[in-house]
Length: 210
Ligand SMILES: [Zn+2]
Image (cartoon, rainbow, N blue to C red):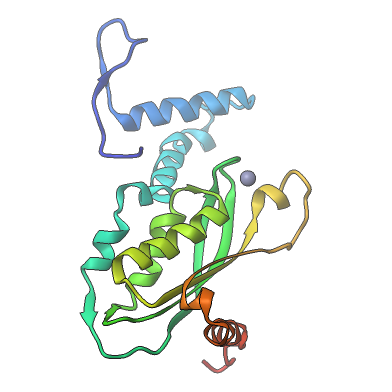
């Protein structure tokens, strides 16, 4: 989707001016402003199309990123087979139905089977999937499956808590309702003890002096 700028001939331009993808983006956003009844030429809006284009590209940069590649860069051999948990990873995504923000936190655990991944890669994987147009359930599964197929652990657990602005700002306007989704694989699914250890750990409040 939002890839490198490509050149193409604008079908509306009779003199054959080639438009960059940036220009196409800006033109589309100018059109949206007009349709909203705004005047895209007024001072406050002059740079809005280019700002919006830039923001949208940043918020969807996950399309150009490969989770396998990111995880494979930082795989280490280990004899540790205890649960690794990274919790309270903040993320910002956009729902694919309304393109409105999804604001949430992710908790991700896995049980190594000979390999661990550098801890900083876990939040990066969350961002790869958050920075796309998403539905929460799908994002939860995608994160779990990326970790499963690359680190090949004995189990993976992913829990996302999120607020959906398409529910809060419009539609049912249910303020402060949180949607929780989970994806459990391997031992987290088959072993009750492992699963409850995980849920206990993510439900323990973070110490306030931390
Ligand atoms: Zn939505």
